[in-house]
Length: 178
Image 1 (cartoon, one colour):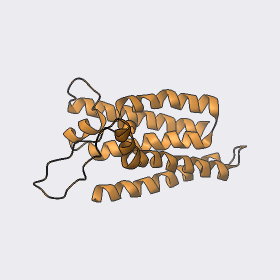
Image 2 (cartoon, helix red, strand yellow):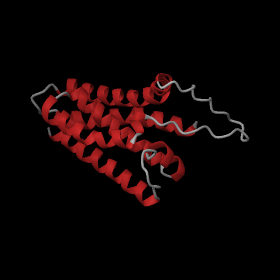
Image 3 (tube, one colour):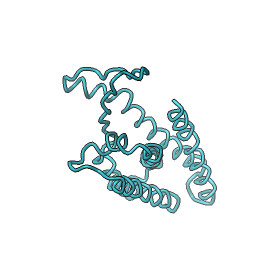
Image 4 (cartoon, one colour):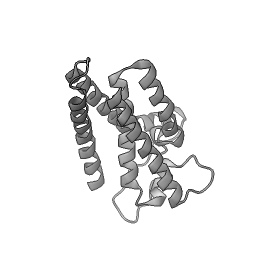
């Protein structure tokens, strides 16, 4: 519960901080900086909403489409068996790797501040989730690296987090520059 509250607070605060920096740095630009700032923050909230929807609603929909039974509810009782980790599409290795070409497309072809904000929100909030989950290596592997055929090590997890972190930083800089 404490982890979820911390993640929710981070998801509320980060778009406001990004929006503030974006507004201050773009205040001399030709585009209306306030509108662009609102669109960027709205896009980041949309990215957070996509991650939330995948975990809380779309996952059950995909299971239903595949004919699988609904996921059992988690029990607080210590003797209850652990529920299997959800294999979420937005937390899969392939989805996260696809953020790079999608980011290039959004920056070079669309020019949509809302779309760029959504992609930035996905990257930043996934990075925050990674940083919160990296202490429990087994949980991290089950949640984010379930598609790997070989066992992931702590070094692999660190490189995975660094890679997404580098992407988020570079993409953030490109958002401000362009």
